[in-house]
Length: 153
Image (tube, rainbow, N blue to C red; front, side):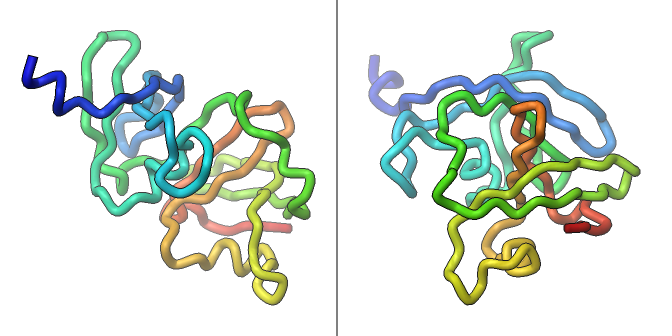
């Protein structure tokens, strides 16, 4: 009973991780029902960009927990059904060229100060190791900047 008092309520978010060198891993991330940064549910991007070096993934195929080092996470893909399209934020259309040869085309939707709202400015945000791109098929891809070879507008 005392252990239950120490638990933090979390919601499982189905995701596909690409881990270096393991490859594709399917599971679920644990998200808080209330984001510490905004009045909404926590997003996978927040989990990836927080200062903790590891994240927790519940593997679907083996029903086990794994703790992945974020530096080994190449990208995380998931469906973004809960959040609005962000029509009030001008989208930054681009293609991410990853070191493994993958191309990820889509749009970045992030509110930035008017004098720092270019694609270049977003990519150079120092406090964020991962970038979030909305793909044309409705999926979201969160990519580790360390695995991006280049970005084309």
